[in-house]
Image (tube, rainbow, N blue to C red):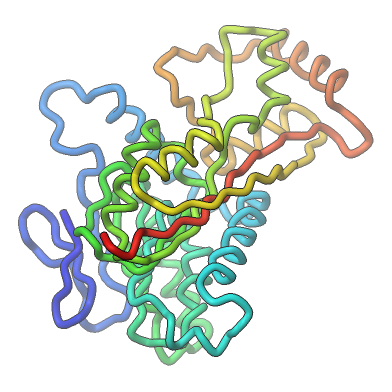
Length: 331
């Protein structure tokens, strides 16, 4: 599957060459293709992982926005950087400098995608919203249409929904004029492949912001598990430097900053529940995870409270690297 331009509009074309486009609406038909590729026999470990991630986040779609407050805060910071990177403080440059196609990788429920689409006054600009989880995309498209109807908008936003994998972006070379991603790419196991794909689809001189959860995230929970049950670990997150190096090796110009965001919880049950509510409790390793016994849960609570608890509750840190990227003009 790839993106083609027909009548100067983005068209998502699957392997059977059927164009998925709704000419009666500015919001295209959702395009769903097999995100794990053509599986012959048993799926590989990576394919199984991607299917698990997609399934988990699809289940969380309807409750995600109400539970994902820290993710929304991080996305807001990424949006601010995206605006500053492209336009600075001169809002009059919006119309002249609007890239025609913006790619949102890991668009989720579409909440941030709609903000991206609303940034522009140029009706020719299109936002391409891609996610691994079909359930998320279906919810995002439905919510976007519903909000437009409720607000009696003259036009639906130019958003095109696409199921796809960041390690194999279903778009042609030099296709998009800008890329945005917030709290999605940490689920990819191959940072080098992701960055090569982003560089491939970006047009020369195109820019973007990638907000990625990195090493140091959830260090409190990790430390507690290491003390209570060393066989049980949090997911591995690549370091900020590894993402920086991967982007540079892919040929991108990069500036990076790192920032910690902290959520507070009354107890361990609430803390783990906050992760489950947004689908982030999926385990990315192939190790079998046994159920937590009551005794282990009590030990975890006691140790977490002793080591990290304070008057605000139990902290859970999200360490995020923000990559400000640009593709070289001569590519």
